[in-house]
Image 1 (cartoon, one colour):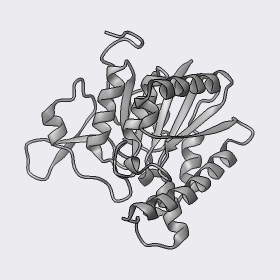
Image 2 (cartoon, one colour):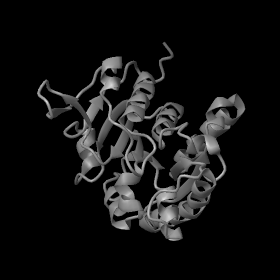
Image 3 (cartoon, rainbow, N blue to C red):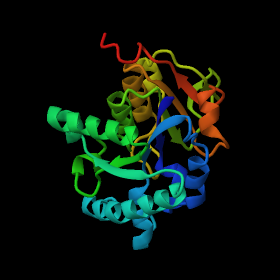
Image 4 (cartoon, one colour):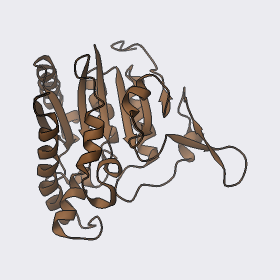
Length: 256
């Protein structure tokens, strides 16, 4: 049985700043719940909350973003609970960087995750944006780094980063043209320098996804960046047919 971390970006499930339950359903339906263990890392709380307030764009003031996150997180969990009803019990975890920096809190987090998975519960994780300012200021890069740290915490087999592009693109030497890189064995400074900026809704961008890929691959996890709007993207990623693939840099569980 494989253990998968599936990170879903804001642009995938909340296009134009509004939660699209049909997009969430399309991804949930792709999960092989009988044969794999899953942890979902979901973005979109701020986008969902902002739409409730009637604003036209993501708020820039931290206090407004915190309020939007509190409202939007409730919407997100309601959506996931509906979609998993009768299939899987779900649990909510809201985390901050302190949960990974404190040895005691990190040990408690790992124990909780392992027990939930042992009980066949599917954890749904997000940043604790409603109270933690550091996360709003980009500590986790729109959940990218958070998902990578979780992959290491639970010794995941795969980390799948779902966004609104097909993967990592590089210039092919001709002006205005680029190509999708299907496999990156090592993330170099040159590759990082080619990253574009952040998306309109997210706070991460490709650079934070590369950083997440490096962290997870270094821990022995297979990583892929792929388009969450692609039909059957999750099973296709596991067959390495779509997206950009990053092989693990060592065997899982090997501390060297």
